[in-house]
Length: 304
Image: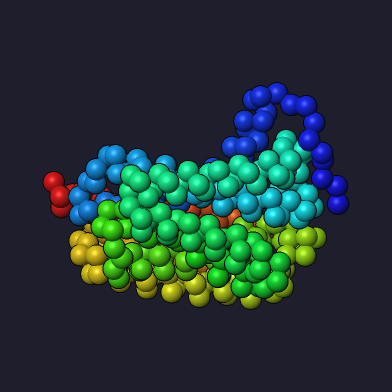
């Protein structure tokens, strides 16, 4: 394994490198779930400044967590084709500089949420970082096939933060929203891991497609998709949502399960491949985005 040492780079390269540490594309998906959650919690349109402060704090907290993840995983990132161009591998900055950057993001995130939102949201965001870094990255990722199953809890916390930001409390509705993202994460990530199976095997990371057959992996994806569908049906009555969400959850859940079932059948028949798994992966992103957007639409239509 070779990790490049820092070399002289332009200011633009360094800025891009620090931005890359935060994994912006992952943060985008987290924020897509936070805003609709705030709309549901407020049963209408929450304060613009409250939304802005929550998103800023949530973005900084997630960015700090992702930065720590890259610092810890820089050795396996250098091995994997998908991650070998990350800034700590190419030497854009030192691990020490990245660690200080991550710590600064977390401190500012906590301050923003504690001062301009509330203490509960600040502690929830900090707990997500601690879980992601210590439970997932340091403990589970390299030791257990259930790594992404348990570790996915960190990515589900933003909905708790969004709800707490509005109500300064937690009820069954945010718990169900948390569980939706928690159950959604394994089939979403395993579909991607099918494509990068060789990478994970080379890095000795026991992701499901590495330690189990494609048939077993796709069966797990199918089971999780069915459970996910059932969970989304519970949100409507619990959150007092109407027909817009009810229809959306049913249709989207049916489509997700259909794609998962088709992939499983292809795995059983020996016709499943990376392209088919990636179609499920891309749809899973569309699914989660649409599901949460339709929650907000349902509330806003009734609100007006």
